[in-house]
Amino acid sequence: MSQHDENKYPAKGWGSKQQPIIVRVQTQKRAEQVARVCDHFGWYYILGIEAIEDITDLKKAIKANLTQANVYDPCLCGSGKKYKFCCAGKLNNLDMNAYLQ
Image (cartoon, rainbow, N blue to C red; front, side):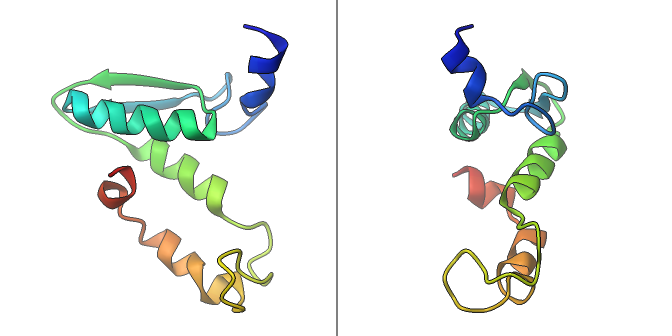
């Protein structure tokens, strides 16, 4: 792995070498969707096709990546509202099926 490739991955937290995202899906199509999301964010991941789907780690990583540090800062969506009263609720009710489409 080159130095350039090393810089695109997170140093710690979800998706890092120390804590890769472990995902189990039921179909090849779903595996491709998950891989596309993980590649977009530059995360390390372990992906398997199994009878029972488990995308818990992926949900945690997405929420950690999209959550603002201070919930009282203006929301990044540009609405003018505080993050806590705008997109924080949407993130709590994140529909992974819609997000992976």
